[in-house]
Length: 622
Image (spheres, rainbow, N blue to C red):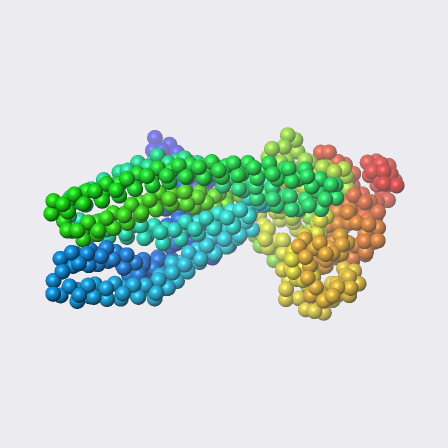
């Protein structure tokens, strides 16, 4: 019995360890890749999942001293607002019942107020400095953490998540959090202090009036409870609509050349108008519920203010309070009404900010990251690639893209993959890069299973030349040396020559320091591709991947690219995907990929002699 119990206990502990293994590895990955600030933010989001307000408070950890100093300075700078009703009451009472020292008493009250008002200039400066510095630093840290997390998330995540939504989270949602934080540390703080001071003064003067003041609180609470959930739901819907609009705007901008070329401006405009109409309608619903909410609260509290005036006036008639105190109570009650109304007015802003906290949590808490913890680092990569019974099927796919792929690529060998579109050629390349993982069998690099190696370390030894070259705004030099900025000018000139870029650069106004516009639109397709090849040269990779690098180019550009490619593939393991068979004649072997997997394998001459699938595909291009 005891043995059975011990065995069950061991099994139970083992299950717990297994369930926590992924979480542990994920945490370890974060500890390796994040600095202290970013790790703290991540832990804050994890610890306070589904508690947006608590999350908001904790992301300011490390800035509490600055916020406390800002609070102290706020109390000092704001003190004239609280003292003014007392000074006003004093002067009114002195004026209604003057004595021989009336002038001196009035002057004393005025001097006190002038001194209190004057200190506001200096204290307000430092109050703003402390709270604004804290908010701006947190804003920077949030965006930095989001950017770093996006760099860690898997390629499949980025394929599924539209870039417009991600941009909206980084810019708009962080801005909403910054706005909420500013409101909390300015408006909400002011509201709390004004109410506390007003009630404190009133309770020391008249308990009767104090109890009347407290009667406004249940009304405020009831109004906020009634409208809170509606405003939150409308804010959530509006945020999602704004994210969707951001996606459509980015797609529209990228499609402008295609739209203009086909005369489809009206169609695209109508499509955007439909989306803009939808988001405007969603925004209008939010505006109207907020307006309804604000008007009800305003009417309620203005009515209370009128009642307060009548109530205190009646007390003055009974001789229970002075005329000056009527003014003082009215001023304090007006202040309380304004503050409570301010809280109600702020509710939509608070809802937007907290909704943005939840939105950012979606990214920060996503576990779809490439995990490098406990993975082997490859000290050197030779370039041998082996597919052992490998296959791949998408999560939502009905059947595998390919399966049972067995292929060994030797160190320094060039293998070209050909076949119909959708056969899985690019999928094979993505498996070698590590963007996707085999759902069947395994892929080995120098005999090491890719599931067990540190992909970041491994990728430092590969270079990819995609079909559509990706350039960024910067100089040609910056685009070529991306990730290898310490390269010597001599080496850079060698690379430019090997990539057939000398003539292109010679024609540019500032040579290598000429600016490349967004997406490289001021360069031709062939020029952009040669820059991409030069970038691959700079990395001096052991494994080179060319994904249809010449498929969209004219014959002259293709010839120049082919010359550059021939230089590039020397002494490197090279995987090529090509539709134009003329570009792969010199490959060591050609793998024909068809539906389901590998159909043929051999040299160009061998495959042509067999007159199989490769031969028929080749005949179609003649």
